[in-house]
Image (cartoon, rainbow, N blue to C red; front, top):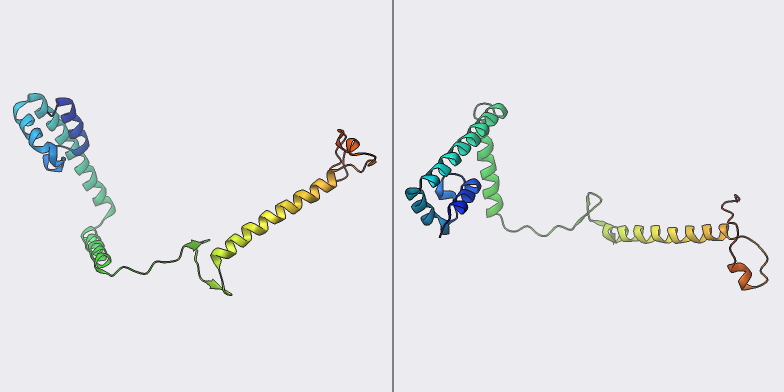
Length: 160
């Protein structure tokens, strides 16, 4: 059974035109609208909101489109959509890398070059870390391993 609260929610979602409502609720909505004053009031409020949206849309269209431009644009759009639907399925495109379509580059695809760049960057980061680690280790006496593990000042790039 369609409650008045659910009826109001549907009216807010779909508007006053019951033809836009979900098919499974239309029959009950028509019965409720015919028998309930509250339901009729809800539909009247929804009609006002629908009218307001329609008028705002018309005013915006008048401001943006001049003369028959809107109808011509709609006709072009419909033609393009119909052509796209009727056209056979296009072959799958390769994914884009960096805004360019992946194409062969010396026998290596740009997708593989991207991974090569990631690997190179990672290798350089590791090498930089090793160099930085080498430069920061103090050159104290290496009597035993335990003396190396003792905390001491770190000399970063010659600064202590």
